[in-house]
Image (cartoon, rainbow, N blue to C red; front, side, top):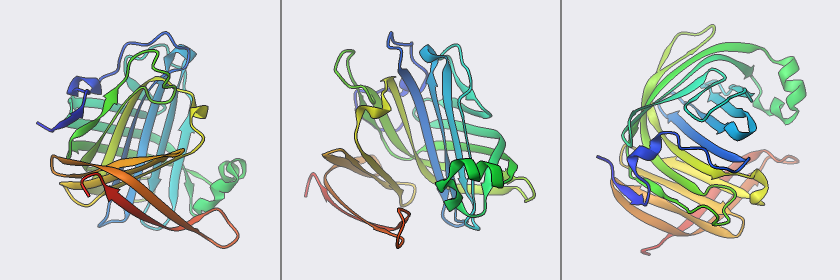
Length: 264
């Protein structure tokens, strides 16, 4: 049984009853990376059932530097499950094991910078069929907070995160199926969400094995995050991020983070 930090519980892995807010959102996000193969990506599904649609994003970073991507807004009528646009999330064992699957087409960009102009990128690059099937096992504690209705939080009233060990398979059209063995992080949020509720958001996740990970968070003027070693949980009290960009562009070249732990 994984540890828990905060007032969340394993059963929160399932969907929740819709709130009265028109902008009620319930979203799940799973990233993964296989360092031995230099492959990774993420899946995100956000149900906005009171508005009649969901948001689905899938990205795969391939070993040759290319990127596969798609985003959809399928219609939905309920918040009963995460199963839209070719992506689905299955809770196998709450707090311990989650399965994510994507079956569909993704835009294949040999040069990821093409997405600087999304319209042109979708016109000039091909789609490839992709099958992604991953199982995420809890490698650290679930940590987060469930707030109260009316608390003024219009971004993530209820939210938690967890570092994961990830295994599965990836099949890209025109290539052999590859086995994925790596790590990642997941998060889960529910409640009213206005994306405009925050003016800036920098969120960096890191895994260094089955029992070591961190999250850095800079949201507006607020800094924080966490560091875990197994079930040991230490809050990060200060974050100093420095970013280098490619000359004449806004593309990242490198990032340096200096952090202070709450316990010194």
